[in-house]
View 1 (cartoon, rainbow, N blue to C red):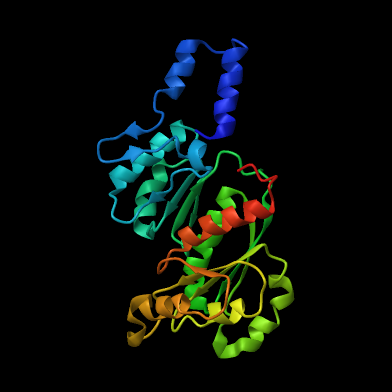
View 2 (cartoon, rainbow, N blue to C red):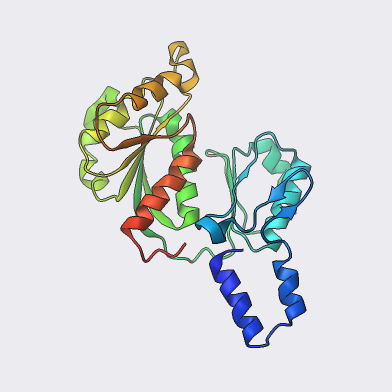
Length: 256
């Protein structure tokens, strides 16, 4: 339940459009609903403005079905991350028609109201084409939370002129997410060119000595460019959440 839903419920109760018993029924699962294998945090939007998100990897299809059903009944916007194509295929017959699955980012989005205006601007940059899945995860996350996003792909340091050709557009953003694997140098380059907060996302893309993203992670953590924060390897979701909060501070009218 988000703040708007709670306000509508209280208004309906005050105007005697629903009974106290009906209101109590709707509030019964606050602050969380116990499914035994999971405790669904319906109260999270009220506490920090962001709904609970489903990390799908490691969960069975049966568990995902129950979690999604619980969140739909609670009128929560749904974001599932790291949902592989086969699991989605099994889930699809039970999902609402407005469900959107992005195979590239492995994300599932179910929104009740998609007409909400997005605010501000977050620009997501990927060093290479292989980094796009994590960049898309960051973009979809921020959009669900209420931020406007744009993506610029394949502008890594191996062809640095591609980045320079897009700098004018990148500078319009309130916050920039830089997604890079291999040696992860792109975040430092961008950090030396912009006066905006930058969130660096190392990816697990790279040859053997990249150690599954550790090389990129260490490069980003050791950047000499100021104003760069780093999230974990392949954590596009975490970057999208942080970028949205920064973007919201730059656009206080965003009520998401």
